[in-house]
Image 1 (cartoon, one colour):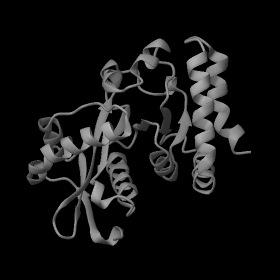
Image 2 (cartoon, rainbow, N blue to C red):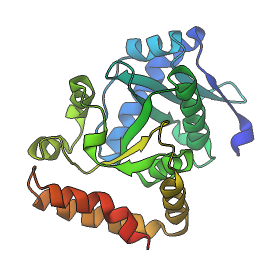
Image 3 (spheres, rainbow, N blue to C red):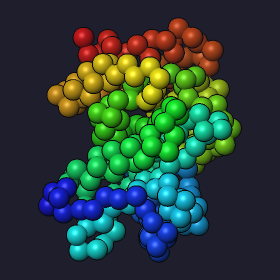
Length: 234
């Protein structure tokens, strides 16, 4: 099975029939990983399809294979590509990357001036984001929209986020800024992640110690955390 076995496209209103299946798989996937996600109802997902703000993938046999949608924050200044999910039977075929690339292009088309960001603890997503030009940033560079942060309430690490006064947590913040477009760091980061995945494990161990031991207003600790990527990949 390879990526040529799939069709990845902008979702259409008639694809709303898959909304319930998609939401169920999102919940099951989060449970299996032991993490939390911003829970969305089938109605919410269906509306994203109707509005042309989602990407859906199908296997050539017609079965649903994957999904992702766009959310906007701070009056369209920030965009998040959320709810990325691939059906378990179609994983490891490069489909997640294809979906992320498609939703990224759709986001750039619809919101060309917006900063595109994400929070993740997953190595695979970090690799994909880096390939697309995202760079690791501090939480202060993300949207401060209260509605976005409410979505973290279903995450197992939410208490840590509250303790750190929303300045840090276990997720890595990544951002694509269309104005700066300084993506040499992102490119190098992606290359190193592909070559040395164990460095990611090291990063997460160090990050966990720093996050849990630092105070919310520890600017030095936050700066060290932000610069850690550079240190690890020297």
